[in-house]
Image (cartoon, rainbow, N blue to C red):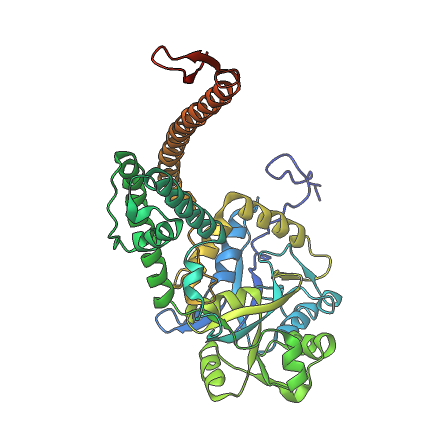
Length: 450
């Protein structure tokens, strides 16, 4: 028999490259997906009667398809629904029943004993979700939150300063504003544009005009901010921390993921009887409303999806217990693990992962104000120009008035000083040695000052 030479593959290599198989060996990878995942947004399995086959969609599937496109070779595969828990699906990969597993599978230390995980494609952690309630304690002083502390301080300081300037200008010629107490009342009525006192100086009007306009704008901003706060309820978590749940033996829910139960019992310290399984994302609002659970524990990606769907009335609270993240499962020693991990990094660096995440959370119609909001107090920045103009005009008027009063008082003091000096000199020299002269008409003497 004639011996044949070695096979040369594209690229000049003699080893069989990944993705190339002979016609007899060409067989797609059998990749398992969770058929009964708690969140259909990540993996949803449905039967297509037209094609007489399974149809698998979801965020995890979209990520896997994007990752496969970044491989340097073709990777034929088929998605096979797996009925069982996530732990059982990982063990099935270990037993060679599946070539790999794709889904919202958390990377856990005990699962790494049976299989290898790729680079995590989504960050994960255990977080608590609770209902929110209206915060009644802060409603009494809600109006104070319309402006920041700095804004209140600047506004009050400017108001007092301008009142002092007006008093300084008017107090000598205006009987209505000759006392400082009258100016304080004038400043109060000025806020409501209800002042009755008449200004007699044009300089006072020059100071007051820009400040009246500033008050008009500031009042409009205050009204708009307060209206927004009254319209949007100020909410707070119904349960502030995990210690409260543990102390009261409150029931909590989870989505059926086995590792969450182990974590709640072994790490956090919940009693097994207080942990309730919730089969579907749609069952959580009912369980909260009936009081079956006081809190629900999700991995962070699941919590974001839950809040995207039920944005009003729920919030994440408490600490986040860090986990390994979501990853794809492969048998130990599989060369695909490294290649898939490298492709995941490429998907992240290209921005595709961010687009997929935004699409996952796109149904959300929530804003930060519908969950928990601390209110956005107005600061002095939007009114900086008004403060600068009013402050500059007032400072100019203050300087002019001060110089005018100083000049007037200096003249008065100088006149008084000269008068006093003249009297002292006169009394000392003019009336010191009088001369007696005889009157020509008689013998009487008279004093004639020198």
